[in-house]
Amino acid sequence: MKWVWRALLVVVLMAAASAGLVWQWLKSPLALAAPSVELSIEPGTAPVEVARAWVAAGVQTDARWLYQWFKWSGQAKQIRAGSYEVHAGITPRQLLDKMVRGDQVLEQLRLIEGWNWRQVRAALAAAPALKPTVATMSDAEVMAALGEPGVAPEGRFFPDTYAYSRGVSDLTVLKRAHAAMQRRLAAAWAGRAPELPLRSADEALILASIVEKETGAAADRAKVAAVFVNRLRVGMPLQTDPTVIYGLGEGFDGNLRKRDLLADTPYNTYTRGGLPPTPIAMPGLASLQAALHPAPVKALYFVARGDGSSQFSDDLDAHNRAVNHYIRGKAAGK
Image (cartoon, rainbow, N blue to C red):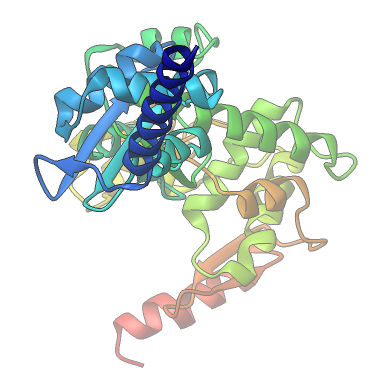
């Protein structure tokens, strides 16, 4: 019987030694092939493949050990897809914890109020570590992929800063911006002021895009919106330069001429009444709110004062005096 007890003792000691080695390995820093190692984990990647991918990326350990640790911990199925970066000193415990928490390396895409669709496309193309797909798609294909076939992309994305994992598709980020604008627009339309001359949320978006491009000072935004709402009410042409410029497209050289104001396009609000057919830019939340809650003023005109603010007038005579003072007077050096 003594040999049996001795054999059991040997087994126990070996198990204890093995457990000690495993415990020590879990607490010890992993060797890395470089000062930092990066890995992007796609959704649906099996834990065993995650372990192999880390080793292939430069974590110098046995992939089988990593996988067994993931499995033994009971958290293997909690590993989140995303982009991760580890540095010297990280332990197997910390590596798994990072993936379970989703402690990712994130990049950022910033979409600016007043940008047009061409600028959005350019920002997507220039964004770091985004998987390019939109560049090869037509506008119609992009909007079909976003669930709005037949809708023009202009103005349909909410200007904000969007964080994303490295390697994610640019269309994925664009979907977030599109969904954000849909939510913001729906909420603003639901809370709109009564008796506006707007028939739909789409018309509100178009008006908000004009307000975005015409507002120089934030304090004037609701009054700018009121001018265009008042013109719509009385059937007066909107006569706003930014729509004309938008209609000229990439051919606009920065100098708006009289012949441009007379050249009829769907976006020329001097030659055509009502709103243009689509937004002309991405409006921010403030412009959405202004378009749907214009200031309670009777103004039909405004002119830039030269300091970013505007002078508002209720009638043409007052407007002409303001133009003489702020435009012609300054041009004459008065």
